[in-house]
Image (cartoon, helix red, strand yellow):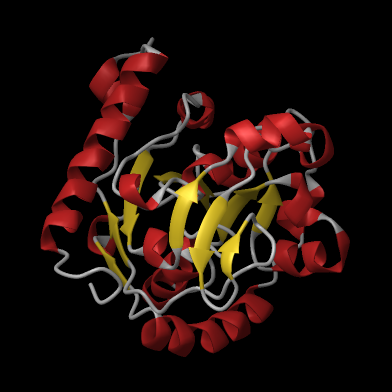
Amino acid sequence: MSDKPDTGDLDKFDPGLTRRMVAVMRPVLKTYFRSEVQGLDSFPPGGVLLVANHSGGMFPMDVPIFSVDFYQKFGYDRPVYTLSHDILMAGPSGQLLRRTGYIRASRENAARALRSGGVVIVFPGGDYDAYRPTFAENVIDFNGRKGYVRTALEAGVPIVPAVSIGGQQTQLYLSRGTWLAERLGVKRLLRSDILPLSFGFPFGFSAAIPPNVPLPTKIVTRVLEPIDITARFGDDPDIDEVDEHVRSVMQHALDELAAKRRFPILG
C-alpha cells in the first residue's frame, strides 16, 4: 500500500447510492454468477480487516458479491471499504467508486476506515493474484506481501480471512506475463509487473486487450472465523508467522471449496 494519504475518500461514502447500486447488482450476481456468500453469521462487530484472495482478471466480482450479501444482512450503517489502486480512483469513474466505498490504498485511509468501525477489504495479492493461471486457480498467493498484518495490528482490529472460488474460470488464464511486461517496459507506464495472457469469449486470445466477457461461472465466497492477532500471537507478534497462519487457514478453506466443486463453470 502507498503511504500517500487521501483522507477525503471516506467522507465521500454515500449509503443511498450504495443501496441503489446493490439493488441493481444483486439480481445480476445471483443469476449470472449464482453467487453465494457463506459464514457471515460469525462476522464480528466493529472495525474488521477482511483479507481475501482476488479472482477474475479485469472483471473481478469479489467485492460486489461480498457487499451484496453483507449489506443485506447488516444494513448500510456500517460501510464496506475496498483498498484500491490509484488507477481505479482516477477520472469520473473514481468519483462513483468513492461514493460506493472504494478508497485509495494507503495506510492512513485503512487506519481511519478501521477505527471508524468500517469493514475494510484488502487483496494482498492484487493483480498478481487476480491473473493467476487457471491451473493454479486454487492456490493462495499474495506474492510475498504482508503489509496487511501490520495494518490490522496498528488499527487494533481482527483479521477476517475470506476465500472465493470460481472467479478464475470466467476465462482461461494462461500466464501473468511477467516476462512480457518486463520486456515491454509496462511497469514504467502502468505501475504493473504483469501483462496477462488469457483466452476467452468473444475475442479468443487476449493480452489484457481486447477484454473478453466473463463466462457465467458459479462463484462461492466463504468468510472464515476472525483472527485476533495479539490474543493468538502475543503483544509482539512475528509478522511472517501471522501471515503464514492467515494463508494456511485460507488455503485449507479454499481446498475444501475446491473438493466440493464438481464441474468447471457449473460449480
